[in-house]
Length: 302
Image 1: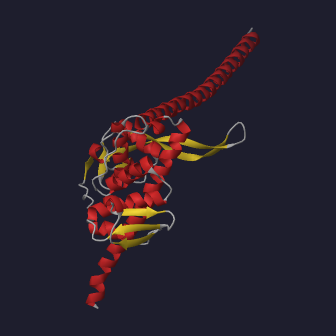
Image 2: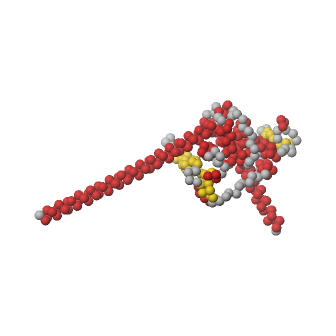
Image 3: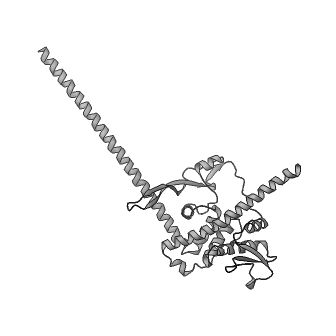
């Protein structure tokens, strides 16, 4: 009897061990499926967020090419932000249209300021490349949050002082990609005029500095291959960037509204690039001028 009881106990323990092992296997399988589900759910959620942002940007793109007020807001914001991509500017316009200074969370923390909770502006960030099913390369985008200074708290930020108008005129004329030639008169009360045949910008002598700066921006945009509406938009971006009163944009031409989506994107890419080319050279020349001014007292003290 004792031996029989011992066999029963051992059999019971074996069954218990087997049940325990089965439970462990089931738990591992559940966790594996849960991990796979969590990954798939995360990927689906992020894809949905990306689709929402693309739709938001496309909606803004439609607005700025069909409504003058929306276009004016975009040009102002693109000028204020400077070198941000068109899609980033459009997403900021949709979420924080009065933004003036944008940084990432870490960027603001480095400046001694903390973004407020829930105030992030979602934008795209290039996150490498991938190969499409047809073999062609594609650009992968992830979503990040940036913050406007108005939604941060902390150390005061020294306001950026805009350069004087004469400094701007000097900066835009220095190392110009197109020759600038002074003349006594220009037709139709013009201050500056680009000649494609001569590849020269003719400038009327003794023109007011404010008018001259805006006119030079316009003619440099023309020399970059832009015309009409494109020139006005590019000039507006540059003027907003340096705190100069922009040219008023009238009714958006019908031909712009009739462009298809890819054509509109190409047109505004050209507008932005022309503005960036001009601003980069102005900023470089302004920086060099400041460096020279700082070094002058050192040379005089020697």
